[in-house]
Length: 237
Image 1 (cartoon, rainbow, N blue to C red):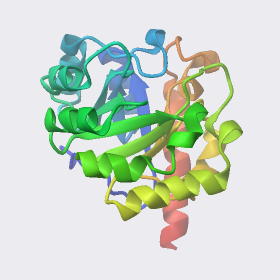
Image 2 (cartoon, rainbow, N blue to C red):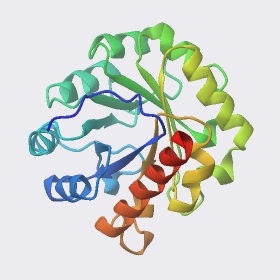
Image 3 (cartoon, rainbow, N blue to C red):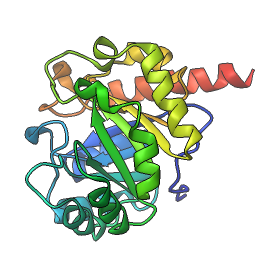
Image 4 (cartoon, helix red, strand yellow):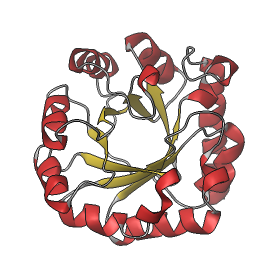
């Protein structure tokens, strides 16, 4: 049965980044809430070809929420990158906002109204306090923190729980979806889910040998999904 293409769960949903149709189907089978099209060979926010993203969206066929990375925000026009990826049909489109000026952010949001999620890197923590307000004013639908480096240093190594909690709260106050990602492991789920984000993003921690360039491990995905469901049941009790 098709699911609603929204992100308003009782607890954080699990986002799994996939690089092709085969991985998308595996993530779906394992119970992923949000299937995100991204090229792990091209860094933290490497975009896949539009045709590949379209094939992933069609393979999922509404059975999970879909998102796609439009680019890392460098060396390209944000609005053009967003418009091109929007044609592939994902519900949400993620793009690094970096030091983009507010008018460029607004142009990017206009290219995919109601679908854009801005990503900032934990290494650039000085951008965090003002980001939700800037993105909301520009017309974005969500904001996310990720890590630029993918060498085993995770989000919780770079930012304190109080900083992450403040970011999530700011997103909520401006009506934005919030996401937390960055070399996460299953052990991070209880602490981060407790902060109240709409989703937690995974790649390497759900791959064989913890290597984001290797294939996804269906058992690891299922375990992450189960960990979130346990927290949901605990909240409901």
